[in-house]
Image 1: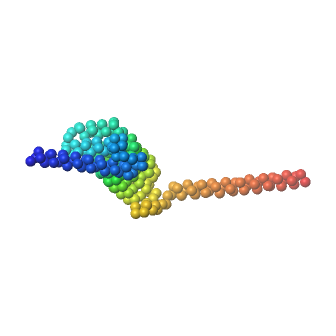
Image 2: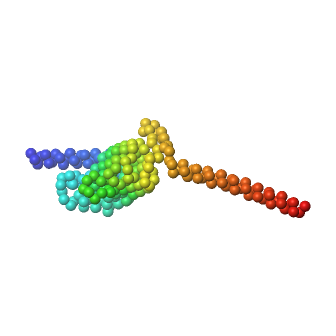
Image 3: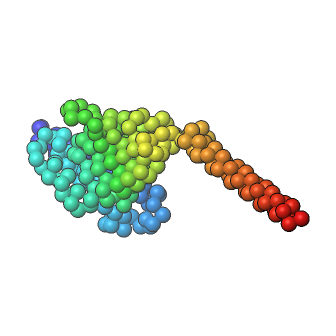
Length: 239
């Protein structure tokens, strides 16, 4: 009976693996205009390969197999340029776009339909053996070379701009940019209406540009007045 149960578990895991991989491929075709055919995505997308290897290494880790899960993770890193710790939990579908340089730490949690671009880091800030990596809701989009560090929560539908460094929680349906990352907009998932939030840095720069423009106009006016005064003085001296 134990053997039959083990065989059943393996068969169930296999079909779950196939289903997850297929949904990853379909999601890649949906999100990437360059993806046109499922076989091309399966054979030529490193993000798909990294996720496939991760699901195998994660299953082995949960079974308590020593060493081999990390070896598979290391193999995946060398083959794809994407490093995913076997302990990370990634729901399907997921798209790791281009992928080179992506690092996903041990206690990271990624929800469904998340889209990560190249160079993204989901890192930790603690040496304690506890949750120390980010948790993503569903439908999160992360731009190239963004870093999300620490045990922060990124809400469903959030968008993180390229190059941002996120060190605090991100609200749902918000857009975060900058270093450190700060919210600049929210959007309505029903119609994608974007509400721009006050941005003190942007407003200060605009005020400085306006002040410089006004000073330039005033300087030109003073130069014209000085030139006119010199002209009148010259005429008086000549007379």
